[in-house]
Amino acid sequence: MRDRPIEVYRFGTGPHERLIVAGIHGGSEAITIALADQMIEHLKENPRLVPVEISLYILRSLNPDGEALYDKPLARYNANGVDLNRNFAANWKPTWSAQGCDTADTNTAGREPASEAETKAFVKFLSTRKIEALINYHSGGKGVFRPAPQLSPPRSGSLKGSQRSANTLPAARHRVRIHRHTGGLGCQPGRAGRGGPGAGLQDRDGFGC
Image 1 (cartoon, rainbow, N blue to C red):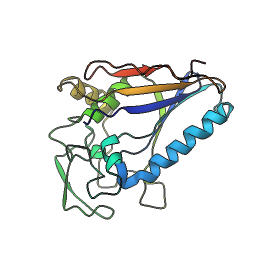
Image 2: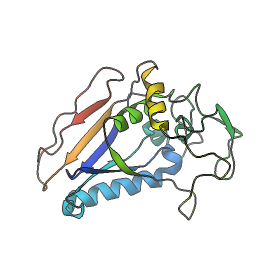
Image 3: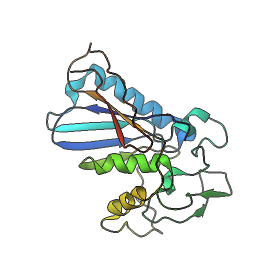
């Protein structure tokens, strides 16, 4: 919302696409962003770790406004005070009571599904890819969590529903930059493109390899 870019790094050029997402809760889960950054740097130095049949995308921070707040009380939310993790169409409801890891009394999921610029940009990114597996990093626990048992599984085609919601909303101000790492090191990053609001992906043909 503050015109900060959402950056995606790509490693490999294989036909099978994988995605790692970090920082959806901004500064309150900054450790996930640090983990993504370390992985990005490691793969820059060791690009051959990615199998030839894989394209791996790493989205280092889905909530750059919350990241900028770091450890402040509202760092979990975007600039509109919305919890982006609750802003997607599957199982959406306008408010929910915090339990466990969040001390706020009530949190908002936005005025409607995919109401936020970050959500809209992310859904548009997904709509242009064929992601076969996605890992969403969170912190605050010591395990790998299954979906909450009180929630029904997302309906088939829920991603398409999110895309339709995003396409009917006003233009988003966030842009997604893709940095490509397809070969060795030592290449110079390209210039980042800037499209109009809500233009979808802004490819940064980084490292020109």
